[in-house]
Length: 257
Image 1 (cartoon, rainbow, N blue to C red):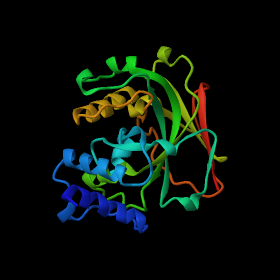
Image 2 (spheres, one colour):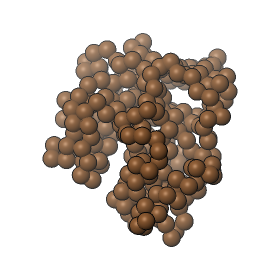
Image 3 (cartoon, rainbow, N blue to C red):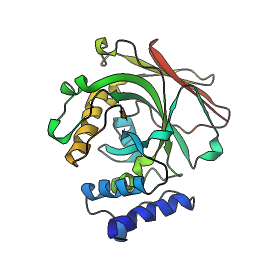
């Protein structure tokens, strides 16, 4: 087992033994971001959770960066068999520190290859098949949010434990994403409003695409890429019924039992 495999296995062992999240020890800390993403790929391949069906950006919005004390995004993978359709029901006891995030998901219309970049918020639009409101299921393993090292978080696949997708937005190409509103409905609480632009979805999509293609990876057609939460991560409780709406265009719904 080489050093990168050893680091990935250390993180997998934490998961398998149900340990709370801890940053990697200094002796196992990746030397830079490139090495962290190489370790993440080994983590994904050795996790036993199957193949990837997409990718995520974490900490795309300022509210999320402030929550975690990290001033830039990081990326992770979404396992194909953890991509669910709305409405979905989850058992809370099956997760180790479950949090929900409130996002947009992009389904790609074409492969994105290294030679095609760089991508930006304008040219990435031609590779979008659809947009859908989405919950991300975060597994933070009861992390201390005041002490999160980004290299460790990357190694831990940016905490992704799956997504739930609503129906695609009709005629998304005609939408001005700078003015589209969203709303979180949590049980009988007062609804919480947010703007889709707060996570900069097209910039976030470009960022993930540029990152992965710069690492020499092709992002396959029909991959799902989620573009960051517009509302701070929130931990659900048993009995919660949660809906995230994008105006009156589409919504995504889950129940926690």
